[in-house]
Amino acid sequence: MKISILDVQKIFRDLLNHRISREDAEVWATARMNALDNNELFFDPATQEELLWNAVIYLSGIGLKIVPEEYMEDDDGIKEMFDTYWD
Image (tube, rainbow, N blue to C red):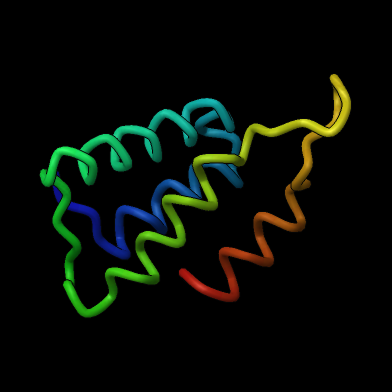
């Protein structure tokens, strides 16, 4: 499995535009985490491994809630994170 900046950008844009749910973004991230555990994840480009992995870690917890109806990270926080690192 390969992960690139374009993949990360698509997931963030789909999440921010409500084309996918937070849970879908977590599933995407979890699949990459499992691939890494199995030595099946490749970073493209390899020089951006840390940045790409940080996106996976961030997205793996995007569905966390602080109360039943409120996410730990709101849409503005997600957009700010995306704009700062991956846009």
